Length: 382
Figure 1 (spheres, rainbow, N blue to C red):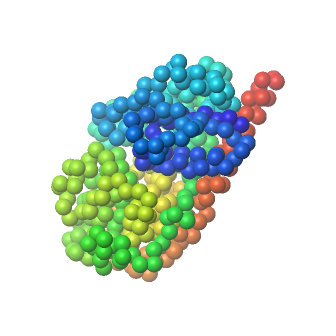
Figure 2: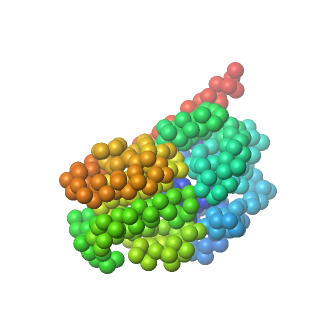
Figure 3: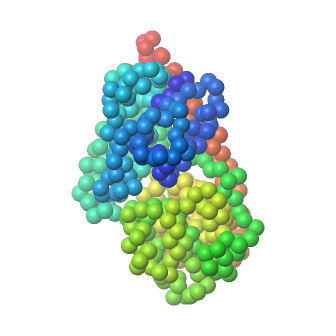
């Protein structure tokens, strides 16, 4: 089977999509019966660290409204030549912007089976960037993109319901896994805390983009209220980059902003945390939630989107009312005050993460491909 992937985000970017694709390529590299090509933006990266013989790069530039995002301008002559030489059996468009749309166009032109993936709830983002009037238009665009495919994959049951309620057809599930050998509990949390000057404190951790759609302001407001009660016994560490990082760092000197972290620096911080405080209500899944759980850290997060598929209230975390300061504050406070409950949920979080292997996730994805190809063969016969 020959698979062509199209994505508008790829290494060296760090996000849920690139994490999934890097795990997927490792899986595919060990499957002799599977061949693949990834068509992705070029970041003008001088290092060979992120170069791969199966990755085709195309010119891209920073999006002015969100510099971390890239807009690709694929050269269709080069693109079609590479694809025609590769002869894909199936096209998988992972994103809905320029590169993703190029993959859809090729699939339609060559009448090749097409799968799209809904990974980011862009319509919901409109509310956080003060353009709610674009909400309906965004869903119109989502329908137009995904209804061209024979199968639209999404990462959670809640997201599947959301898509279907907004007119997206042929929706299937493609979950996400976690490398629970990489992300794991630490025996001594204080060793990590000491590096950041917070020894002996309860550490709240957030990992993700530092941007409006992640509801960062709600987390900061909750932390400020908690500080009034616990004072110097409490610390908040925010890991990640984004358009609001510089501004929030200047305004909140009592919060530790690390910027992007990876590898051991990141896994150590997860393992050193006591509570993962995640305010975002726009997640289609929330990979970072699984990373926290694998690290033995209970999660406080909203009862919204894909988080509902992984946070089991009272078992591996606490679900709170979305976009509600008092509810978020109380959820975190409960785990600060009740040590036994926090330890109980920490242990259960790890147990839960151990059921989420990447191998089973990708085996399921290949089954989707196989079934779709069989359907195409039958339709040709008919």
